Length: 330
Length: 257
Image (cartoon, rainbow over all chains, first blue to last red; front, side, top):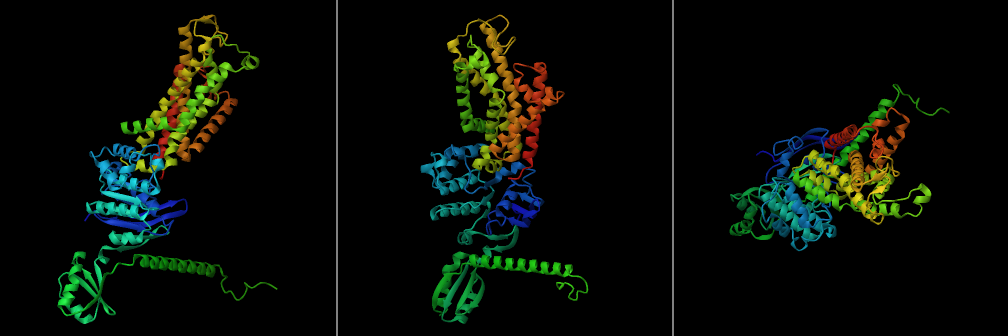
């Protein structure tokens, strides 16, 4: 499948400082790709490079197969929030700002603005000036503006930062819906627990580099069953066509399903085979733990590299045949 | 482009600096027309309402008008940086050059509208002095305020309008310079200050007499004291404006946001 958004060896330098380093990624239609990483890791700059707002020092960006710098018209298919909180003209109303965006986007279907305001639960405040909007309302209006022209690619820089749980739910639901309707979604976020529920891939950034990419789709649909007879459970589930893999872990079996909807078939199958089910729960991928460990490992690796470099420099600086000449003279 | 132009027209009307400038331009003629010390200090004695616009213009073109136009132009660009809307707009299918061009097109008109407002305020202020024919000058034509004999109302009005048009024209390159400075600094206050700094330096360059006819600042007073013919002045100012606009455009095209 062709990617809707991709970068190859993307690098951005400001003077001698490299803020994005050799990033290669792909986001396919219908996929939600989350960029995670500590503050200052380069997520915002990467999103600006991908959107065409900033120019790469090296590497390439392809938006629907073309370079957005060379073909700015491709941005008709792009929806984006690149400021946190989303930026609007404060003297215009929420609806007025969306109308302005609609005009700049070349027009949108009748009722689209009202539908988006309703989806973002902003109908009641639509005719108030944005200057009086709360942070969460601005963010939701930002997502509404990004979705306005039914984009095929969505780029969002921390679209849910500073949001209350309800606003957070609204925004994540809207992004999920957009992906379901075929849009490629790339967002940067610190909400790992939300992302793990509906994201398809996660890219972990540290010091400008994409240090790891995790395929969440293959880690979804996994269930943990605690049983009285592990061998019996393994045999029963192995015979089922709707499982793809089984792993024994202590007194439990980890079941990977072809489709999440098949979870309801686990317990009846085991009971039928004479195995007592003591507990059954979704084995949610511990993205938070994985992220923490991965980041720590990367930092340890960098520290080691730095120490080796220092040691190598010290060795180079030491005089050949040093026999204590470096000691202080009396 | 139409959508962009509409947006920019709406924006310039809402800018705080535009409103402040309009207020200043409305009040300024009052200060001159009714200042008790004008006769004592300058030996001026107004005999016609047509002389108020001259006083307003003569006292504002040196510093006030360039300052106001530089601030408005800088804020029209800088407001996008302040509100953070610039990247959002540039992510729409809008080219960078068309976005900046829309601002520049609006700023081409702003000096003329500002001058029209200033002229209207000056003429209104001059009502108590009357607008009949008078012996003397408007201060913007032959013979200055002393004039060269009887001046009819239509001739006086023509002199005043012509001077205000030329003054507005001289402000256009300053607006473009301010856009350029704001594109470089990406900050309205810094852009306006940089513009004024350039104008001050240019003012000092009169110490090179050969340069004087080509200095932008020299043409700020050309409405009353022309260096050469109007055609030459228009060509030079257009060249300045085009140069500043082109450099701003080129820099803006390569800027990271």
